[in-house]
Image (cartoon, rainbow, N blue to C red; front, side, top):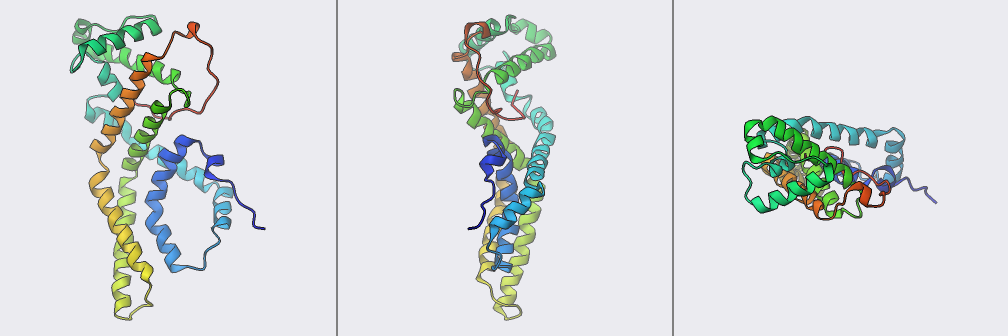
Length: 263
């Protein structure tokens, strides 16, 4: 009986599968399909899987995608006017003063220090942002239990996926366009009997064209920002259930809900 290799669940946690491995898979999909079309006899993927694992290829790809996403994050936050959760805690631009006062009050009780007042924020916005960022980092450290704070975890996965997709955008677009041009040309050449006809050329060219359009039109800063704001909202909603550390039982260790949180 063939030996089955380790699954993704054994190699990566849920965040890595959703936010890093998935963008890498989407990026490589056109090339993967083309390999299947060109070498249909290459059906025993288990051996390739084991080889990839043994060589550390998947782990390397996971880290490369992570680095691509993290590299663009500071510029994204700057273009948005700051990290979404930090923006949500500012007096300036707040659309719900009652909710903001409630959040500031809960954070003050948890941290043991008051949040900046509107006047303090107006006088020194940078120092106020430092206080908000500190509060957000505290929230992140308190919401790592992916079972209790399931929505926070899922929204962070969504944000991480979109951010890393944007980080991989140039590579993904280049791969998709290149494979589309190659397979479309091969399909036309096979129609004129210049090469052996393979119906797979048409399939791969259609998929590559769709992915090219997706990378070009959908994967952008606004797409990432919408997910970042959702994550920030869920993170701040955790204030409704958090208690001071000395008032609750210590939580067990759980997988982190993302390596690049939205502060």
